[in-house]
Amino acid sequence: MLTKKICCIILTATLISASPLYQAAAAMAGKAARWQSQKGQPHRNNFAILSFKDNARQAQENGIGATFASLLTLELRKTGAFNIIDKENVKKILNQQSFALSGMTRNQNPVKVGRMLAAHYIVSGNVGFNNGKYIINVKISSVESGAVVLARAVSFNSGKLNSLAMLMRLTQKSPAVAGFRSALIPGWGQFYNNKNIKGSITLSATILTAGSAAVFTILKKISENNFNDLSQQYSSWSSWNQTALDDNQTKASSLYASMQDEKKEAELYADLTTYSLIGLSSVWLFALSDAVINAALINKKLQKARGKVNLTWNGPGQGLDLAFSYRF
Image (cartoon, rainbow, N blue to C red; front, side, top):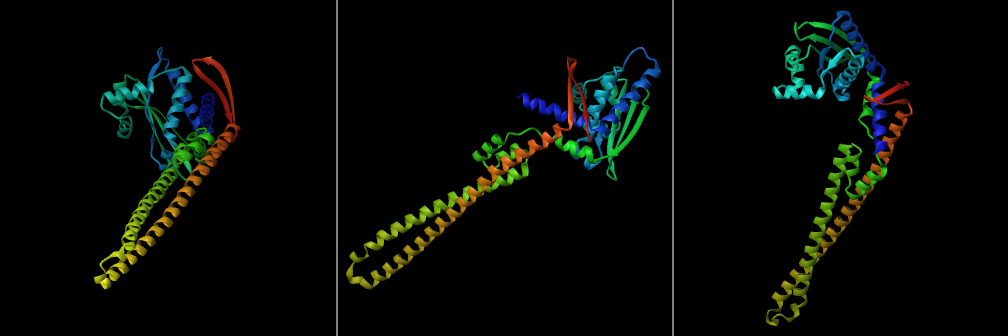
């Protein structure tokens, strides 16, 4: 459990320390703090940060908008210049008012949101993508006047953030657990490794081959029973009425032919059962080995990321305070 928590801290720090995104959030928070200081107000203003809309597919896949909003919330809170309305309270209030946070962002109506939240200012924005660069537009709107009092746009290359966001979706895996799951139910280990498509295919192949083996076994048993019944009838043909010998011989020949047909079918179903069991064994071996190997590869990626992150725990206080750096 402790190892998993440490791994989560390392991955979080890895993403936070992604220079462009972190610097953009820090710069925006610093600019907002200076603006607040220049106004010379004796009290701290209430700030509510809405979700940042990911306008581009690349941003959606990597969760850039949500990550930036979280970083900006942390940086604004660190300045000590604002009262930050808790994200959960924002969601709760909006849900009570039958509004969805993303819907309000799409409607570009931050003033109405701010009044419901008793906020003085609303922070909103969006994320775009163009020519290999993310473009984040941030604006701070006054709830009282509805005017945009502060705006900033920042752009940076996507490569580093994409790889870090991918790492952020990974968690440490146990090859033993992955192998055990796939040994018990082929495909379960793939789901454990977050390989959902591969897990679905493996599980479907397991069901198909196991089902085929069961069906062919039943059909084989039916053919064998039919063969035994016909054999008993054929063995008694010599005791039939000798006055109708020709007719009896015709019936015996027909019985013999039916016996051979049932025998061939039983042999065919036996072969098909064998092939199905071979297929099932192959799927099982693949699921087992693939689950173990993929779990080990995931851990290797995490270990590589861990080696690039320097963490310092500054001690208990108002939550966990981390000092970190990321070497690109």
